[in-house]
Amino acid sequence: MTRLLFLLVIGLGGAAILGYLGTWQVQRLAWKNAILEEIDTRIAAAPIPLPEAPDPETDTYLPVTATGTLSDAYIRVLASQKQIGAGYRIIRALDTGARTVLVDEGFVRTAQGEDLSAPGGPVTITGNLHWPDEIDSFTPAPDLAANIWFARDVPALAEALNAEPTLIVARDMSPERTPVTPLPVDSGNIPNDHLEYAITWFSLAAIWAAMTAYFALRTHRSRPGT
Image 1 (spheres, rainbow, N blue to C red):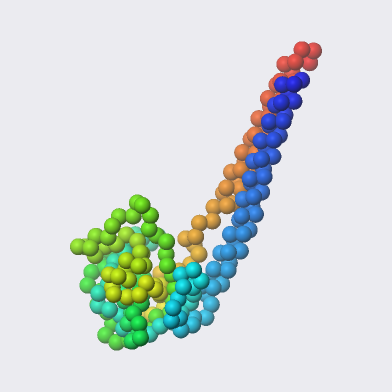
Image 2: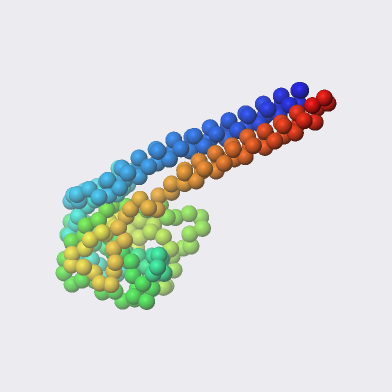
């Protein structure tokens, strides 16, 4: 009897803990979905003139517009697109007359990433401010000889292009920049695995409960007189 009681306590306690973790992940899922909805709403808002001193903490995803001249020099950041393959994000400096900021023009195929001339006159950029977190201990250093970078390191890009560390990710450019295709910011790259975690915890809780029932029944039947 003591063995059966101990088994039930451990089994039901473990299932309850696993069920609680699944419930917590469901709550986290609702929290994350609300954040993503807020980000999507912010991204799609009407653009405003580029702020004088944008703050990475409060102005990420802020829709802005700026007019100026793009630099001839540019940096290629290795990227890929589904159903297209490997290519580059093209990063240039935009001189507005009063300041110089960075612009992520968009994506070009690998074969099109050579000798991309800048437009001869002013361009108007509409996009979103972004300070992407793409650097970790495994990110290779830029191949400066080949002009290939492996992440959008905004401070380093700004230093290389003599601009302030403010990046506008273009969603529209006037005039259009062929063959560059804008890659606007969105919330699609923000991790949201809480549903998968919840399913995992609930599945483990169900398995734990089933195994508890099995061993409890087996223990009960093995008792003398049953």
